[in-house]
Length: 92
Image (cartoon, rainbow, N blue to C red; front, side):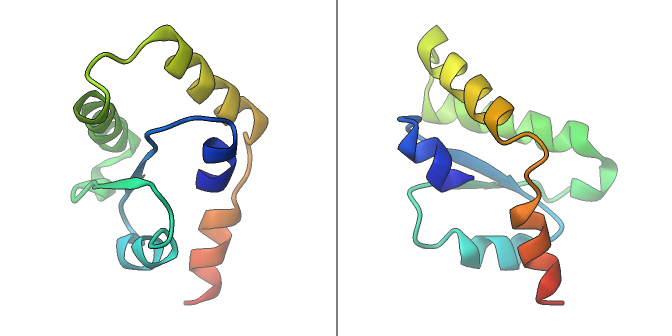
């Protein structure tokens, strides 16, 4: 998904990781994505959203409508894409 976002012109790219942090970090090593780790991932998705929003603000303090639109369109195009999750679980 990081590659798709990059190809769509979405830069910078941030990724929130949690339960499979070590494996996902290794898979993201060759990308331009900035990684934000949610150490409290077991408390639920809300924490990951908070970490992601805080990370976006750090990366892009003047987040504009164009970048927000790019993010929304990337998510819509790849909704349901569980490739990253499957890839990490296959290695277990």
